[in-house]
Amino acid sequence: MAGRSGRSSTVDVRKRHNILMVSDFFYPNFGGVESHIYYLSQCLLKLGHKVVVMTHSYGNRSGVRYMTSGLKVYYIPWRPFLMQNTLPTFYLTLPIMRTILIRERISVVHGHQAFSTLCHEALMHSRTMGYKVIFTDHSLYGFADIGSIHMNKVLQFTLAGVNQAICVSHTSKENTVLRSGIHPEKVFVVPNAVDTAMFNPAPKRLNCDEIIVVVISRLVYRKGADLLVEVIPEVCNLFPNVCFIIGGDGPKRVRLEEMREKYSLQDRVTMLGAVPHAQVRSVLISGHIFLNSSLTEAFCIAILEAASCGLLTVSTRVLPDDMIVLAEPVPSDMVLAIKKAIDILPTIDPHAMHLRMKDLYSWHDVARRTEIVYDRALQCPNENLLQRLSRYLNCGTWAGKLFCVVMIIDFLLWRLLELWQPSNDIEVVPDLNVNEHQDADIPCGFKETRS
Image (cartoon, rainbow, N blue to C red):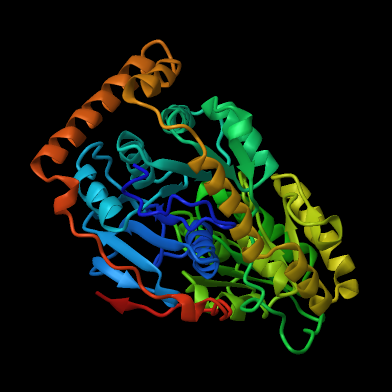
């Protein structure tokens, strides 16, 4: 597929890639994966690459939109089925996927998040058509429950065909390698980052007479919402001057509201509901401590945003020890961690913490490291169908045979599409001139136009 990518045959100091980011999770939905894709794309654009995003439609948002710095987004007409995921179709996305790849002269397809149905289908189709594919895993998963068992098998199928993989932490890499069986040498660790220009501390340090604990998270089991139900009443009982602000929505919100009613904490626990990303900083700078109760977290961007705003964090190990208080995911230990955070709060300098975060976590550094992974992927040798099928056979006695059948059908459908509408009949879109954006800083928000 090198001929279709439109890339020059000469080797430059920095190769220009035409990248397609694919995930079910993107703006206007807000979350860690959404932010990761957006900021990474902006920095890759600034490095001179072409970046296009493909996701499903959101409400009446369908078709092609342009965001800041000419970032092009295809909102394909697929509706979310469950938790912002599209219904698995296996082959129905192949025609539109093929059209986008040819129209945009894509050279690298980069899928995000193991939970994304669209990501798995896009990577499958891309490998069938001979494109180089990258996968980024953003979360940790178990091995025992029925959901994790099925998800791990799907991940094994997807990663059997990728050229390279990226994980956001070393713990995430170990988890992904164990779950999927991918060779560790194909997995790179590239951490998340934070937009320190957007997330900065309040101009004046807050008074510690009343201590505000901020929680911003999806209110689901995996994010530890059930832990909050037990931790918050205990902390409020021990510390009369502590209040909570909870931002986020989800199925566990009802339990938190019931807890607030049961212990009469309406004046000490504020439920904000879903918080738009542009308003997250204003919520963070109103607090002293950020509480992350997630049960499985590969690398939480919300923690970085809170630390960049100068909040002391109670969570799992992600930041340096003097910027975070660690706790086991049990109520008693989390209460002790919050007590410890309250004790050391007077020693925290929010502005000094912000400057350290600016040095430690940079999206520009993430983009440069991801650029190296793209270079490595393009150096991988091209494989025919038989060579790829041999890897799928190793995925299990029965699963391996099933995966081979899925890929053979996908290949046959692709060849039929080639006969019905040859690649030369698909119009290639001209690239936008984004040179004027190269020297500008990435803005805090994003603007959008229709096409």
